[in-house]
Image 1 (spheres, helix red, strand yellow):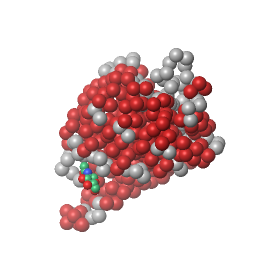
Image 2: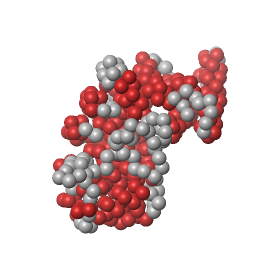
Image 3: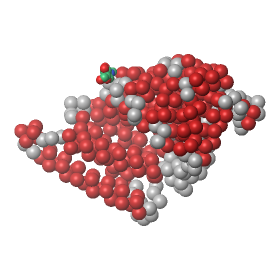
Image 4: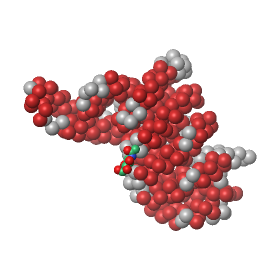
Length: 383
Ligand SMILES: *[C@@H]1O[C@H](CO)[C@@H](O)[C@H](O)[C@H]1NC(C)=O
């Protein structure tokens, strides 16, 4: 339908370059860097616009093109004004345009790389993407690295990574740069080698989350990076040792109604709660309460619910956590979730499995590999 693979990879680099430009041109207004970044990304997407196919998608591209022309026209008008007129110009409309373009990009790039409805997202094991040719952003970055004969360095990613880390260091309270940097890091961490290299950024990621606790964008995007980094033991330990769990939980508390923050946070916690030791440790830090609260608040938002259910299941796998979870009222929340989505296979499967664990009757029927009690968890890496 569309050659999205290249588009998304260029998109990643575009996001990065724009963030760096924002740093260099720190004298210029923020709206201008935001809108310039989004226009550049829109250009990239429009270059890969399909000629035929899904009518909805074609209409969306049409809207994007019209909007882009409108914004460019307004900016040209603004720039041609004498300075005194410019000073009176209400530039908040430009920020609104930037926000619109960003929503378009997020919504459509997500749909283009859509997961099949009704399944819990899992580790990207299969090489064939379920949507038939359209790849997820993660697979795209993976392919780009494969294109460089599997060599992360040859793909130039180590240089890009250093740039991002330096940038995040220099712009420690710039929420715009930090959320885009975290978004970029997420695309970069695709396999063991890249994950281990991107692991160097864990301290700056967590510092960004601490210093920008009020920015839901920073909390959501940076938790999103942690989801990927938490998929391997070494980076998982580094996150925990650098107080990553505390940072994630703080973001959840400060943004209780924000589904983006909560879905990324729950996904990260699900991956962090991989082994018994971690499941126990996470509980002592208050993860059970926070995930339960999230489950209740976002019960009607399936995207959040799926991940929080996954996190909950992993915590409940450790038998010493079960009594605490029960006393928090977990059974009732789980039953509500299961009742609310009778048609949803994964909610049913993970929900009832967790209920059985908490009631202490499911331990023998858990479908885990024989002799391996470390990997019985919902793996949510491909977020
Ligand atoms: C976040 O917002 C709260 C309430 O407005 C404020 O008290 C706090 O200082 C802010 N945190 C940061 C890091 O700016």
